[in-house]
Amino acid sequence: MPEPDPDIDNKKLVPKKILKKPLLIIFFILINIAVIAITAFSEFGNSENAAALSEVKINWWFLIPAAVCFLLAIIFEITKYVVLMYNMAEDKTDFDHKRARKIARRTVLLGKYYDNITPAAIGGQPFQIYYMRKNSKLKKGASTAIPIFGMISGQIGFIIIAILCFLFGSLSINNAVLIGTACFGLIFYAFWPVTVMIATFLPKATKELIGIVVKLLAKMHIVKDKAATIAKTESEIDEYARSVRMILKTKGLFLKTVTLSVLFNTLISMIPFFVLTAFGGQVDFLPCFVTTVAVTSAVYFVPTPGNSGAAEGTFFVVFSALSSGYVFWAMLIWRFFSYYIYIILGPIIYFKIHLEKKRHKENADVL
Image 1 (cartoon, helix red, strand yellow):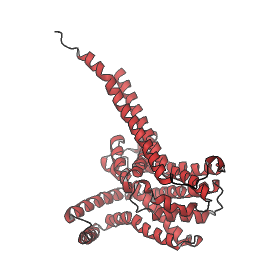
Image 2: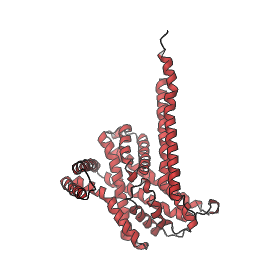
Image 3: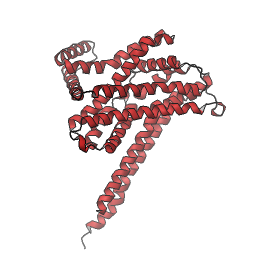
Image 4: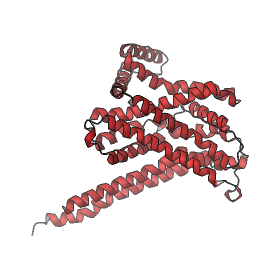
């Protein structure tokens, strides 16, 4: 009996290898479509008072600035990562800006994707670190520091906007409960970046503070393993503090990244105004902007993916300027810009990555 030809066996296996990944990606995309459909139905499916789409009068021209705000915001966020990558590269003369922008774009959008599908937005940053370590030519320390500081600077940027709104714009809205809740949410929002900044300059004091907080939580039976929790928290804060120190070594880099984060958060917070105006809402810009920032702050501590559920209910304060029949459609468009678009872009980017890997493999086989 003749021995089997290994080349023939390998050829038989090739279609399976080629089909396996595309099928997984298609399955992945279908799961995301299902997530969007289920989430949209749970958020908006019970809107009995929603007007028929054919009856809704929309000034589409005002949705253009809403889309422009979103695009500019993402461009500023991508630019922030490119600036960080350039300043942390060892050899700046050999820095490939085109490749860096591609890596930054995927790092930002896939990070937002994971933020919006995981509870309390815990999935984005670990993925960003993994992706940058695998695809950038930076050292592991820099690849870890960039996503970490990207998140911290984003939080600092929002805190700056929120404080300015609460100090100078709170009188423009007549809702003391919302402002109170927003301030409470901002405390949660500020806790981590403030702790990291303190740890950067006062590491010993920070560890003592962590010990006090964990012991208090243990007495309240919120924390079970006190020693393990303290060790884990100290390790994470040390990593964050190291990242901040790496950024601070470069003069002006901290200010640049925070400025880009302020621009990102400002543009994102402007979108509801244009959506409201498109649907005929008679609103002034400043009250709408301040209310948007306050609501964003108020729902921060809700640990659902994309703040689903709480965001819709709380943002009704912003969209209540519309008639009840129009609120459904206006909020749906707003959720598209703030949530669904990231879930849509995630699988698309993954599919592009798969095609690039396949093309690279085919070219390597030809050579």
